[in-house]
Picture 1 (cartoon, rainbow, N blue to C red):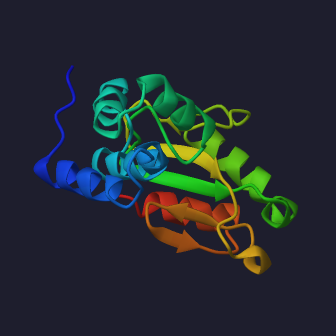
Picture 2 (cartoon, rainbow, N blue to C red):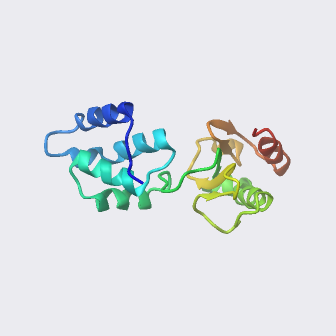
Length: 163
């Protein structure tokens, strides 16, 4: 399926590329990938091909970035994206157990570390690097909503509030 960017995305990408010196448009790669994901929710192979042509790089360059950085995804996420912090302070406060409990509740693999999505497409869960609330762990996000000191009971409430 061909990727057709919206006019807004095309304009944004063209603008991003102008922020870098002539001949250095490759430096815009991460920003362009973020723009695509912000609009589409993920970065398809077709989107990478389009972006590579816009930037003037080979698609493989973008594929390497998408597969390296955990915040970039190649698959469409669920309606509700859960991010559980996995850094040391949250792990010590129960973040790993929180991730496991949510995975079990959603019938997903608690040992997986990448993005996982429920069969109905309602939820996706992934580990996240520091969510910047080390003193109130474990922390998680549900889409753009931030939650601190998340217990199993609190995570059940968060999941239950997702309509």
